[in-house]
Image 1 (cartoon, helix red, strand yellow):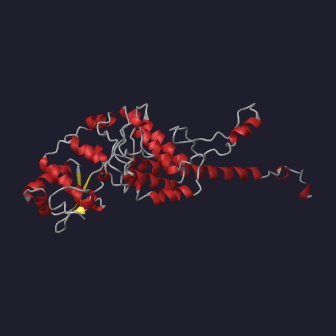
Image 2 (image 1 turned 45 degrees about the horizontal axis):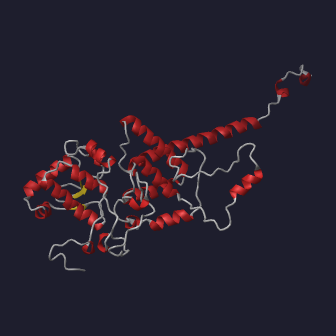
Length: 355
């Protein structure tokens, strides 16, 4: 480790914390005063820098870290909690409460942030930097680049409104380290047989991400020609298989019109696929939810993948109830079909049996 801390020179080698870009954008757009901003930064330092969502922090620690008094810190913390910028948990006499930043920016009080302005800035790519050349210490992906080496595009990097890739503007560095904690999970999913249901087929949401095989030849088509077209030429490159997780990610990015998912969104995407294992169901709910959100608000106001989570649960429960009802209905119908009515048992035979 270098001695940069002694001269107060920041280096990633001395440690860093992962912070969602939306939080940085929201805080820079907020109307918080200096000490309130210091409190937010200190909470992020105590949580995200250690891979935690919340942490126990005393007023004395807040006062020391923000160079203020405990009384003033208590007042500013109360304001941040009222504004729903900061959450406080386990608050009871004799216990040190836990604090965390509220990542649901749409819940923040309108008096402390201009949400419409923030959304407009995001749509206008205000926060997208113009970076093509990358020095050795500028990127934490572990790949040391020569100072004059131009950085290549990552497979997940999106290029917008350009005609020549060489002149394209890339957002940030490779960002491979963002998903390093879930690479093994995605690899496992890719190796598992995909479970696709036909209960809720979804139309193509993203032609680049949701590939649909055309297995049925048109009426009147030449079968020999169709067979030739279905067989790849000798030496041709194999078709790239897109994993279900990547399909969900691309559909989500198209809904939000963003170039890349946050690490939190990627973890939620993996969890959702692991839970439901039905790509058509997941994409169908996302498409319907996005359309309803846009119709209700005039534009898409979905800020994170967690927005879909309760809707997935609700729609999945409805689907299971419907499936069970269909199953029970078909059983009773079959039982009626198997019943044979013997008319002779109910006809009068003239009283012959009584003679």
